[in-house]
Picture (cartoon, rainbow, N blue to C red):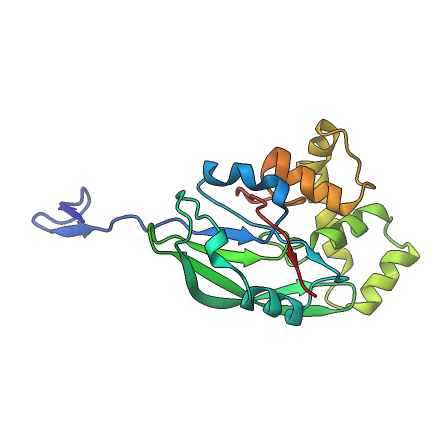
Length: 220
């Protein structure tokens, strides 16, 4: 911690400058093929592929994180085997069946102090709408039976949500998909994998951040 006088302060006013806090990062549970890119970025997201399940639920996520081998995860500072459980926070997620609330696990690095949120693979950071549902909103026109049925099943999803997703896609992701030689109709697993591989972020992620896939988890 350093000290000094402020330029706009009264004469003789003495204050202390706060040292910058460690930056936060997010981790998502992910696919083994991406493990080689781990230590290159300051924000790490590890994605996970929950095999054998048809979508994320609070119960599935809780089972995954309860048995998560933290020693296998590497912090963005480069150290491994240094992450400990740090707490939880609630995260709303709009799905086809309804809106669910996940109790997101946060871990902390004992070496650098950074914290990381463990997010499931389908979650788009900073968005309540998962990647597969955003793809669905892009595939069908407004007023189509598919979108009407979706909004009837989940009243938290509105026409304004669909319009916002389409606007973000046109401004941020349409050209990216073209650059990868992919189309919005491609499989969501391929879209997610290529987005992580090429851009180091989740498909349809808008806010800046680096996502790294590390390993997959199988739940019997």
